[in-house]
Image 1 (cartoon, rainbow, N blue to C red):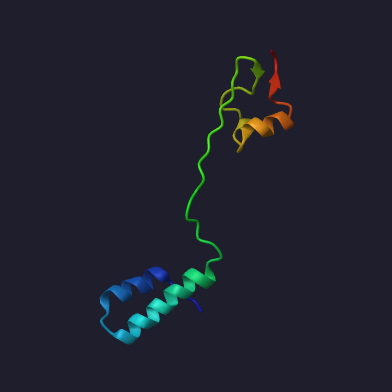
Image 2: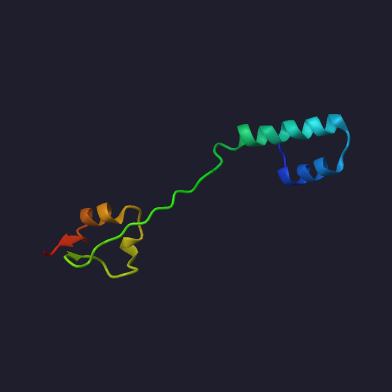
Length: 84
């Protein structure tokens, strides 16, 4: 089945035909539950803070620091080392 959800919602908003309404609702449910494998509902936002007083860290804004959980990844890469 090929469905353009935006177009079908436009038709739905303009019709009073009960049969057509039910058909469009079934199509939209199919698109949501069958065609789309996953709908992102939430995006995880996290921050990592690195202390620089006794640690050698990459320069601010360095590409290697632009990863999730930089405090763990940088140690594995040898980019975060204790200087104290």
